[in-house]
Length: 199
Ligand SMILES: Nc1nc2c(c(=O)[nH]1)N[C@H]1C(S)=C(S)[C@@H](COP(=O)(O)O)O[C@H]1N2
Ligand SMILES: [Mo]
Image (cartoon, rainbow, N blue to C red; front, top):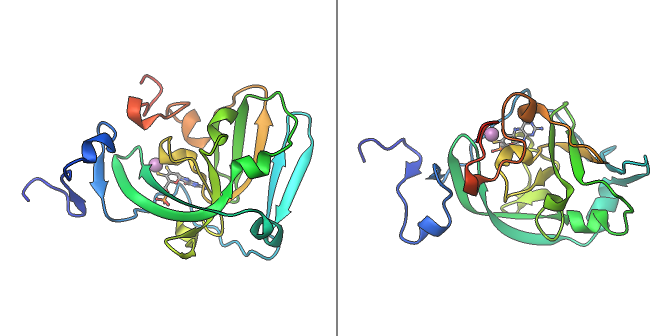
C-alpha cells in the first residue's frame, strides 16, 4: 500500500460513478471546524427561518422533533479531498421547513451557533436536496460533527453543510459566507471541482 495515506484506500470497482474528480475515499469521519466546538443544549435550542421581508418562523427542539422525519443515506465530499460513502442520517427536510413560505428570494444565508456562515442558492435547499439532521448512524449527532443539529446539503462540498446551524435567511442578493469570502467557490459543486474562486 505504498503511497497511500492511512485511512484512505483505492477505489472499489464501481466507485468511479460515485467518486467526484480529485477525491479519495475514506472510512473515517474527519472533523473539520474553523473554531472551537460550541456546546449547545437542546433546551433553549431554536432554529429560525427568516424571509427577505423579515417574516420569521422558529422551531424549538420539541417542535423540530414533532415534524415529519426522514432517514437518508448519502455520500459526503469535502473540499480537502476526502469522500465518505453511504453515511446514514435522520433529520427534517428543508422542504418541510420551507413549506408555505412566501418568498421571491433566490439565495440562502446560513448561520450557525459559534458564528460560522455559508451561502447557497435557495434552489439547492429545495426538492429533497437538503436536511437539518440530528442523528448520525443511529445516534444523536456528536457535537464535533455539528450536534445537536447540522445542515446537510450533500450534493455540494461539505463546507456548505453548516454544523450547529441556528438559522437560514432568505435573501434577494447573494452574500458570501465564511469560507466563500476567504476564497472558496461561491457554489461548490464537487462534480465540477468548484473548489476556489477561479474554478
Ligand atoms: N459551524 C461550522 N460548520 C462547518 C464548519 C465549521 O467550521 N463550522 N466547517 C465546514 C467544513 S469546511 C467541512 S469540511 C464540514 C466538516 O464536517 P465534519 O467535521 O462533520 O466532517 O463542516 C462544515 N461546516
Ligand atoms: Mo471543508
